Length: 375
Image (cartoon, helix red, strand yellow):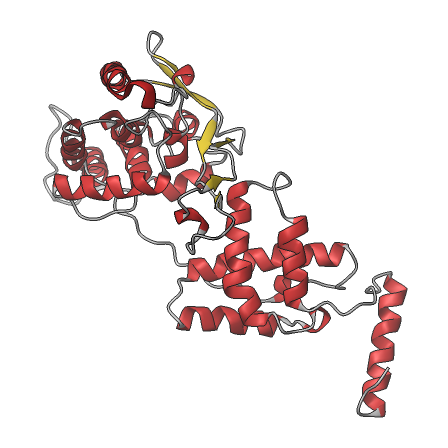
């Protein structure tokens, strides 16, 4: 044990004795943060142990932010201050607090494994101050705006019912794109949510000779499944369909049959409710751009695709649907999740104002007006 001064040696010995007495002695070895994070993301935190979407997010955090930012440190020398400095640097460079917070959660998860395996005594990420998240104020579309969106969607050459489902039922993008006709019972008017569409991942099929990224390889090969099971019990649900939506889906099925006949041998029958012109599952990125185009066509302000889900939750609130029913339709596991999605819009404010006014200033029929004189 080498230290510059006798006092430092004494402190180091006492620290080792405390670790020995508590049974928390770190294993020998010289992991750097980069070496540990690479080992963790490539051999430990991998599917099927975790979901594909989680793994994708972890990889971005590890290789884009964590290894370049703190990878050179020795694992057992990493401090909360190193992490806090990284989060601050990310936000100064223009990254959002949400991105920095996601990086914080990733490194905390990776270092928890290092603690369990004895490479760290404690996790510095649990001591570091996480980036502060300011909840973004979401402005859902009003009823008249939803009607404009539905009208614009109705003029689309295919898949117009996809947007009606998003705006009326609040299904997530992956849930809509992962739907198959076997999940839909139009006679009973029900829809089962069981899976979600995943973003495709690709590998080279050319032996990496094309000079492009794998996703643009002319012979690219998809390396992950099209869908994954819904991650929570609350997410697996059966939803009743409004009669108007049943009608739209019946029409959509007829339009799809015409597409199938027109595509002939090029059609790939895979059972998807919403497809490409040749029957393939819709790519989430393509779907996102179609949403943006739909907003422009309808002449509405820009919004995230996920805001369609906020809008659907607000409509349910305006209609006075009981909270347990709203949670079931939206696939929420807790009421806390509901608070993030339900927004007080002008129609609700007006209704509350009228109720308060009626309660406080309503004069009973036949009652005498007060004279203003004291008894």
